[in-house]
Length: 270
Image (cartoon, rainbow, N blue to C red; front, side, top):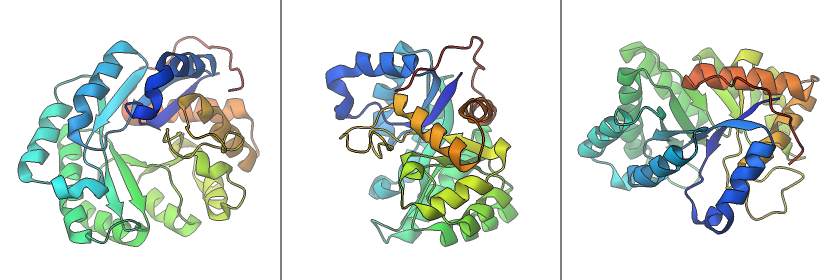
């Protein structure tokens, strides 16, 4: 059984003390591909180094909405250049909107629009961060679609209502669920996980954040724990873990144009 963790941040200090053990655990858990997201382009070299060391690791480049104080036109040029410099770059992002921790919507939209155009121009998917911003996000994307045409991508670490989820499905996006889907009181996320079409469903950890139940008490999340995310999604959708693993693996390979796994490893509980 294969699993793909479609959103990780392995370059963070939290992983430095025991990184090789983390790698061993994700391999033992059947995680055969990982997509490393990027918060800001200065991370690129370190993430690239990890991707060179671990063949199953692919990555994105972009600027997070909470870091748009760094935004300049030249930074957009740099993102475009970096995205074409390494064949293991499979996406632009993470980018998007965050109105939970910031109110600078105009500045976030400027950086977001440019990154959407870069993704579109390079035929790459975009990894979208959207927190407390579903309505302005949907409105902006519909406007962008009318002016420039669609962009493929994923709403990562999704926490919206079923109604919000449907808006992004209607725009053609994949929806990715993280450890929050395992939380007991995350009712709207549970409902959203039930309505996403099978061919648009992804799973992720967003590690080192948001450790899933039953690992929620741990200070650090890690890729092996995507097993628990997939298991909870399977439970919510009344299907087997193997079905969710196979479908989300296929979906991730399709969206990010990842090499498809050849052999079937044995999945062990993380």
